[in-house]
Amino acid sequence: MSSRQTEFSVTNVCDTPKPLVSVLVVTYNQEDTLGRTIDSLLAQDLEEPWEILICDDASTDGTARVARRYADAHPDRIRLIVRDRNLGVQGNYFDGVRRCRADLIADCAGDDFWCDPTKLRRQLELMREHPEVSLVHTGWSYLRPDGTTSLHTQAPEYSAPITPGRKILQALVSRERAVLIHLCTALYRKSPVIEALDRFPELMLNPSFLVEDLQIMAFEAAAGDIAYIPDDTLRYSVGHDSISTPKSMNKEFDFAFATFLLREALARHFSLPDRAMKPYRRTMLPFIASRAFRGGSTERMSRLHMELHRLGLRAPLKTRLYSMLLKLKNLKSR
Image (cartoon, rainbow, N blue to C red; front, side, top):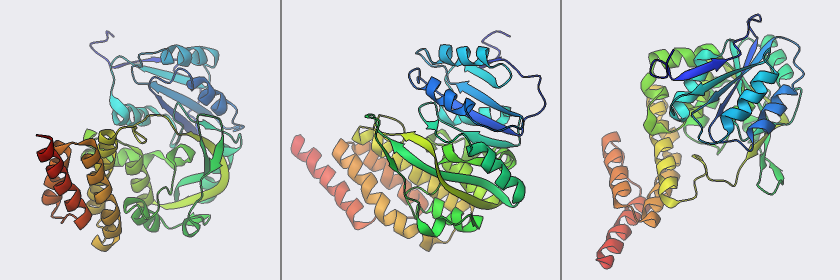
């Protein structure tokens, strides 16, 4: 096929039996870290059939070359998709999910890596023993540019071996805790994600939401119970500019505003009580407005108030104050 007929090229399509686990690696311009990621996956001691699917989103550096080198060296384990054009985080990820051959999926970003070779084996054993579990996740650590690490602290009320999915769902959507599940530690069932993609594409694929992990975790929590293994299995890279940790005020606004809209959409979809969302709104809406104020963006501030009006929500006092201050700031600068 020519590049006009397809958005990707696939290498090393395995002729091996259907794997039990697919590990999805979505990557874009991560030439310097992707090798470390893949090495950590190859170190897993899982004896059952499993595969690694790497989806390069039309990187402009040498990421695809690194991926091809590993795919050529491990044709029985690694499949590679190199996009002809950039699909974005959601498009790249969810197309990868559809192309995973296994019924269970794990993922690891191209700038993170796993640090426990028993991770997949133990997660698979747990899901076999507990078919009611739709997702099992683990502990993890932050990895800073200087190489130092710090362990993420899991909220005690969500650190039980198995927690009812509905409890996790409400906590996830309402951001009752900052981070409950890091998807790069998780092993989850493919079917709830495929069903959500087919039935609710407006939630899964809306590019204005910017992310894909919160939707996945929410639909997995709606589909079954959530299991937790407290052991540290992931090094999560922080301290660099990314979608979730931007280094400009306007980018911070864009990400926080997008996730706010996604959480509101999920809350409505799953009929979560309005009282569960109120603490999140009281905290997040002033933060979002402060980013627009400090970035000097009247367009972003207007967009925030327009969406609040559309959703039938009243802006908290601090949010309205930031809006007034921005107007005064612009008047003074004229």
